Length: 432
Ligand SMILES: Cc1ncc(COP(=O)(O)O)c(C=O)c1O
Image 1 (cartoon, helix red, strand yellow):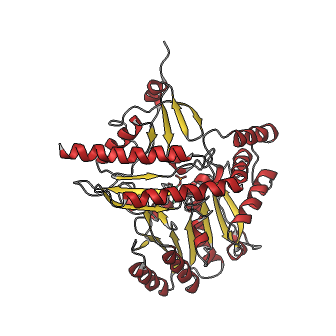
Image 2: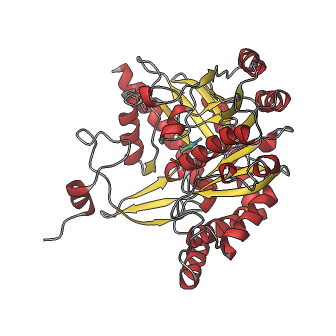
Image 3: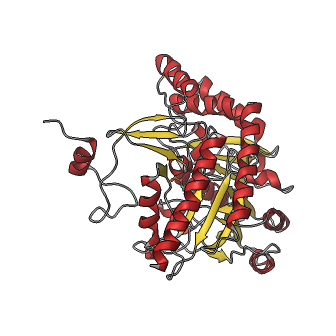
């Protein structure tokens, strides 16, 4: 007897972010094409969240698949200390051609969390290496999410995700988040902390705080954050793991501002959503602080799969697609459609807040309960959208769209219509 993927999965697998006792059975996916995922029962789902915000150009993109296959026949892996290879060099050249001019070096790791770990370690050791060991405090934004490893958790909001580990996390000063256009309180608080002279780095998600509910703030506030870090000689770390590669309408969220971060963390869209990779990109001054005849100055960090050639090939292929004019036009079109829909939803009686930033759209749905990740509307909304062939994974009572750039106008309109209909359904159920 042949068991389904769902049944076999249930025997052996423990899923992330999942209460295994209560969660519905995992859906067995057998194929992905464009913005669609297909399951073993013949159902399909429009992947409106780019599968955890990673997919840029559509599932199983033939160009990326071909480039990975080509690379697999040449060189599948190679130790990255003492050796190097074309795909890693090409990727560094590609990325440095689109990153801010002050960013000069690329450090490879494995995912978004490790990109953040590396950034924090680099920042702390930087100050030690240049003889300012008293600069060791880290600032982060209230509500931030930077990943699930220990340093990444330390700079993330303390809450549901971290509660079992809070006593093991290092101390961080959190700067109040403000979605007000002036961000006055937030900026003032930051400046007060920076003037104390002991801050090594300020890490922030630029423009959009993703996992905490797609909270958005103005580019003018981001500009001030980075300008103040520059003024008070503190390293600015922009975690562009989510916002990078076009999500906010520009290639990077920090492209909206004039002052530039010293360190940038990249992952997710980096490989077009095909393979895991993290990058920490830094300025020349940081890199140079690690150059010495003395071993103590070395950056002792690395992973077995650092700069894996297959992953680099995938990232280079994704870069080729991303930098084509066609992709730029699509990002502009998606952003325009999201903005129009956002304006329409802003006056919907069930929508407490509608916001968008480039291709990202988020709606906070009114409920009798508090806005939170565990709001019981989450499961209701998730199932309602699945039954309408839409993969939407609400953050509690916040629904959001992070579409892949291959999505067609018709598909976007379809999702917008499903959102409107689901909200009407909920309004009717509330009335009954
Ligand atoms: C801003 C940001 N930083 C870091 C991470 C962690 O990335 P990963 O899940 O690849 O470890 C995430 C993941 O959602 C993120 O949104």
